[in-house]
Length: 158
Image (cartoon, rainbow, N blue to C red; front, top):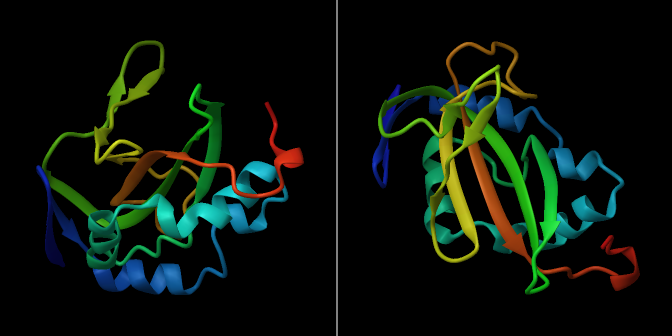
């Protein structure tokens, strides 16, 4: 296990198992989806994550080209698309806030930390739609981003 520090968080990470898991996956969730939103995300993927987040992913063993899921939330007034997605790594949160806040009746709210104007990130103990065979001890990396529409404009759903 390795210790990884990122902003106010400190994680204990099984980087070897995380790397092995991502190397066994052929592509991210968006790669297997035929929808226009996922195709647009794929074309933006290299620019979605700030460099400090790419460095974090490298330290965690997460391949940012292999997201588990991508969701399109809305088109913003400035024309950017508000998207969300997540990854996992094997480990635990030692210090820092858990981004999943229970509300009531099994509902919850995700509270993320902004990094720049168009990207937010958070971490919680969760195993939704994971690539990992053993779901115990997983940290879900939640993110939201605002991305431009870069593929054929006729495919954009308003």
